[in-house]
Image (tube, rainbow, N blue to C red; front, side, top):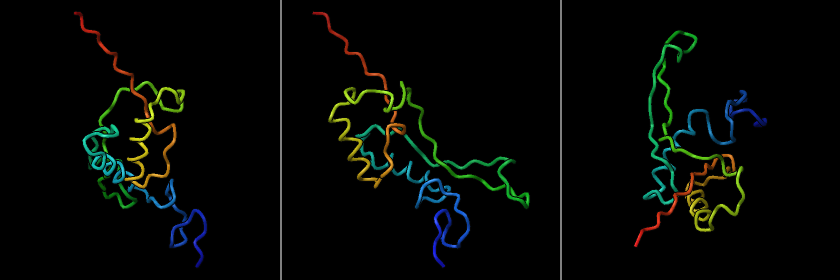
Length: 127
Protein backbone atom coordinates (compact mmCIF):
# COMPACT_ATOMS: atom_id res chain seq x y z
CA UNK A 1 0.00 0.00 0.00
CA UNK A 2 1.48 3.40 -0.94
CA UNK A 3 2.06 5.86 1.86
CA UNK A 4 -0.21 8.80 1.08
CA UNK A 5 0.95 12.22 2.15
CA UNK A 6 -0.44 13.00 5.61
CA UNK A 7 -0.83 9.33 6.52
CA UNK A 8 1.31 7.06 8.64
CA UNK A 9 2.51 3.65 7.43
CA UNK A 10 -0.82 2.09 8.43
CA UNK A 11 -2.65 4.44 6.05
CA UNK A 12 -4.29 6.30 8.95
CA UNK A 13 -4.09 10.13 8.99
CA UNK A 14 -0.98 11.33 10.80
CA UNK A 15 -1.12 13.71 13.77
CA UNK A 16 2.48 14.78 13.25
CA UNK A 17 3.22 18.45 12.70
CA UNK A 18 6.53 17.64 10.99
CA UNK A 19 7.42 14.76 8.73
CA UNK A 20 9.43 12.13 10.60
CA UNK A 21 8.61 13.32 14.11
CA UNK A 22 5.74 11.50 15.79
CA UNK A 23 3.48 13.23 18.31
CA UNK A 24 5.19 13.18 21.70
CA UNK A 25 8.72 12.77 20.31
CA UNK A 26 9.70 16.44 19.93
CA UNK A 27 10.34 16.67 23.68
CA UNK A 28 13.18 14.15 23.32
CA UNK A 29 14.82 16.39 20.71
CA UNK A 30 14.51 19.40 23.05
CA UNK A 31 16.30 17.55 25.86
CA UNK A 32 18.92 16.26 23.40
CA UNK A 33 19.60 19.84 22.30
CA UNK A 34 20.37 20.81 25.89
CA UNK A 35 22.60 17.77 26.46
CA UNK A 36 24.50 18.27 23.20
CA UNK A 37 25.01 21.99 23.83
CA UNK A 38 28.19 21.18 25.70
CA UNK A 39 28.98 23.79 28.34
CA UNK A 40 26.23 26.11 27.08
CA UNK A 41 28.19 26.73 23.84
CA UNK A 42 25.08 27.84 21.91
CA UNK A 43 23.03 28.97 24.91
CA UNK A 44 20.34 26.26 25.04
CA UNK A 45 18.47 26.79 28.34
CA UNK A 46 18.39 24.01 30.95
CA UNK A 47 15.85 21.45 29.68
CA UNK A 48 14.57 18.24 31.22
CA UNK A 49 11.98 15.52 30.70
CA UNK A 50 8.85 15.74 32.84
CA UNK A 51 5.78 13.59 33.45
CA UNK A 52 2.42 15.12 34.31
CA UNK A 53 -0.89 13.52 35.25
CA UNK A 54 -4.27 15.22 35.34
CA UNK A 55 -7.88 14.08 35.29
CA UNK A 56 -8.23 15.69 31.83
CA UNK A 57 -5.46 13.45 30.40
CA UNK A 58 -7.56 10.37 29.73
CA UNK A 59 -8.59 8.10 26.92
CA UNK A 60 -12.16 7.21 25.98
CA UNK A 61 -12.14 4.38 28.55
CA UNK A 62 -11.71 7.04 31.30
CA UNK A 63 -8.24 5.71 32.15
CA UNK A 64 -5.92 8.55 33.23
CA UNK A 65 -2.69 8.45 31.27
CA UNK A 66 0.33 10.55 32.26
CA UNK A 67 1.79 12.82 29.59
CA UNK A 68 5.52 13.11 29.01
CA UNK A 69 7.16 16.25 27.70
CA UNK A 70 10.05 18.63 28.12
CA UNK A 71 10.31 21.60 30.46
CA UNK A 72 12.75 24.37 29.69
CA UNK A 73 14.04 27.17 31.92
CA UNK A 74 12.43 30.51 31.04
CA UNK A 75 14.91 32.94 29.56
CA UNK A 76 13.93 36.62 29.41
CA UNK A 77 14.12 37.82 25.82
CA UNK A 78 13.31 40.78 23.62
CA UNK A 79 11.73 38.80 20.79
CA UNK A 80 12.36 36.32 17.98
CA UNK A 81 15.38 36.74 15.70
CA UNK A 82 13.12 37.48 12.72
CA UNK A 83 12.21 40.83 14.34
CA UNK A 84 15.81 42.09 14.18
CA UNK A 85 18.32 43.05 11.53
CA UNK A 86 21.00 40.46 10.76
CA UNK A 87 23.56 43.11 11.76
CA UNK A 88 22.60 42.48 15.38
CA UNK A 89 24.16 38.99 15.28
CA UNK A 90 27.89 38.40 15.23
CA UNK A 91 29.29 35.81 12.84
CA UNK A 92 30.57 33.90 15.87
CA UNK A 93 27.05 33.63 17.39
CA UNK A 94 25.54 32.52 14.07
CA UNK A 95 28.23 29.86 13.74
CA UNK A 96 27.44 28.56 17.25
CA UNK A 97 23.81 28.00 16.29
CA UNK A 98 24.81 26.40 12.96
CA UNK A 99 27.19 23.99 14.71
CA UNK A 100 24.50 23.00 17.22
CA UNK A 101 21.97 22.48 14.41
CA UNK A 102 24.44 20.23 12.56
CA UNK A 103 25.03 18.17 15.70
CA UNK A 104 21.26 17.81 16.19
CA UNK A 105 20.49 17.23 12.50
CA UNK A 106 18.07 20.13 12.90
CA UNK A 107 16.65 21.18 9.54
CA UNK A 108 13.93 23.58 10.65
CA UNK A 109 15.87 26.53 12.08
CA UNK A 110 14.15 29.79 11.29
CA UNK A 111 13.91 33.28 12.71
CA UNK A 112 10.79 32.44 14.70
CA UNK A 113 12.38 29.66 16.79
CA UNK A 114 15.44 31.57 17.92
CA UNK A 115 14.98 34.11 20.73
CA UNK A 116 17.13 37.20 21.22
CA UNK A 117 18.32 38.30 24.65
CA UNK A 118 19.10 41.87 25.64
CA UNK A 119 22.80 42.62 25.28
CA UNK A 120 24.59 43.05 28.58
CA UNK A 121 25.77 46.58 29.11
CA UNK A 122 29.49 46.93 29.64
CA UNK A 123 30.33 48.74 32.84
CA UNK A 124 33.24 51.13 32.67
CA UNK A 125 35.57 51.00 35.64
CA UNK A 126 36.58 54.29 37.21
CA UNK A 127 40.23 54.85 37.44
